[in-house]
Length: 343
Image 1: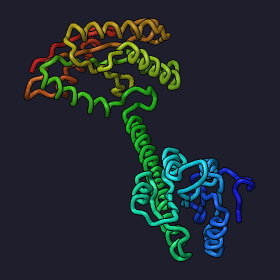
Image 2: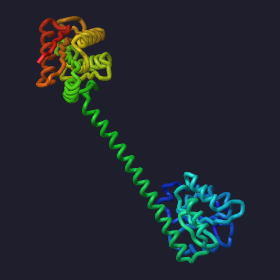
Image 3: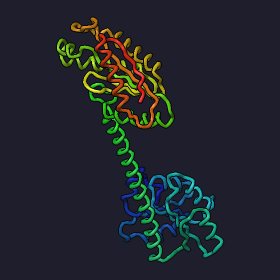
Image 4: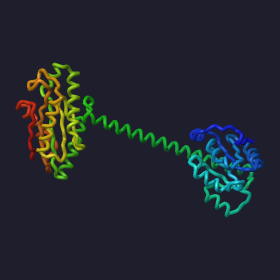
């Protein structure tokens, strides 16, 4: 007989319990019963038998070996068997382990109390070997199958969460410009269509700024493409920092050109933002020795604002802002020009 009061126990993990043989824990103060159950299970393949004669230690032993089924005597000194069943159920480590109550009599009232306390089955001791083995295997298999289902579900949930996170990250990356790490033109095009529809519904003003670095070809020729890339990143960061409303969207439109979408913003607000951005880029004081405008890097800005009407489109608003940018360039650069777009 294996007496767990003297046997040194290792701590088994839940995962190990799922893949181990049937683990039976008998809790009964009578050594004769323990020996009888041990003999009944001795030559059964895949069944590992453990015995605990002290009900005060039953929870601790169960936590250590993680049995797949507990055989629990009802009448023991010092503790009521049903109270012990309730303790198993209240303990997170043993709350789901099947419990087969062993009783000396077939009493419907006692049976009812046992099931109400949380028992899974009820046997009058000592049952025949065939019945005992069948009950032990049945409840153990049901428990391990449930553990496996729980583990599979947990793994599936974890996999789904990882996939969702990767998809979110992938979507985020598809919306960003690889060099400047602000929104790219694809996302700009999607976003302005959404904001156009929203502004059309709400009849609220929508503004767009087109921002172009002055004499950028000359900058690249003078400082090289690595220098040009660094300038683009600094300008992008400055635009992002200054257009800081949660509803503003700054994007790299292409090459050295950037764009800004501003919701609920009339022409006056767009004009104020355009001047703010132009000055912010100027204040970077990035030396531009071949500029036709100043000794430092500058930008020209064209803007357009409208309250969307049916029959109009976001493309027409962008075109109006682009025309204003062309006018700013033609007028001497390093300035902003604003247009009120009306369909």
